Image (cartoon, rainbow, N blue to C red):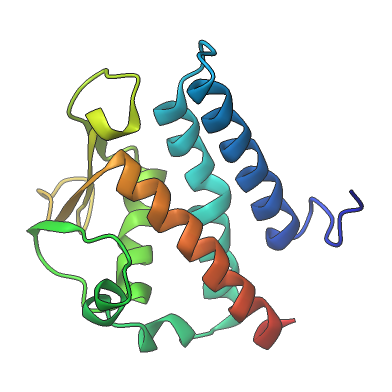
Length: 161
């Protein structure tokens, strides 16, 4: 298949990350010795961190219009809020980006199944301060979330490009 976007674009990178994530999930379902939870987390670089940088650079506030309650009503996975709050997708992605970038994420178990792992993401105002924000989500739900967010990025991409 011919790639529409190059790897140097967030869109092209996102599409490749998504392809790899789906491939490994399918392989795991067929009994392959692969780590889907690890792949999911490493895929957050291309599905959350890189897009966040591009969104920030563009000055776009488009994700503020997506309230988490509304997304939940539309079937998006729910995040358990442990500390602080995130009213909208823009704020959630900012905190997730910080958690991922500063390795403030924690796993409930070493299960090889997505459903068997809860992932906690935390953020803090500065290195010296305690966490001021934290959410937890099941890894299977996290995968659903990032795939839905990747689709939403396609909408933004049309406004942006």
